[in-house]
Image (cartoon, rainbow, N blue to C red; front, side, top):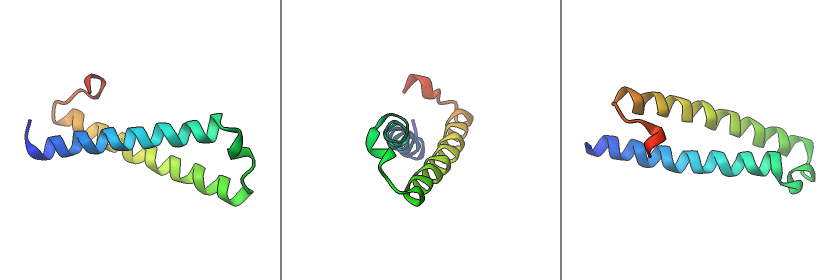
Length: 71
C-alpha cells in the first residue's frame, strides 16, 4: 500500500471512530437531551457533515481498490 493510501486508511479509521462516538452520544446518551436547542442542532449538523465526509472518503478508498469492510 502506498503512503497516501495508508494516510487515507488512517483518516478513515479516525473519522469513522469519531462519527460512531458522536452518533452514540446524540442518539443514546441521556446527556444529549439536557443540552440547549442550539447545541443539539450544532452537534447534529456536525454529525451530518462528518457523515458526508466519511462517505466521500470511503468512495476514494474504494476507487483505490481498498475495501473498507476489511479494515
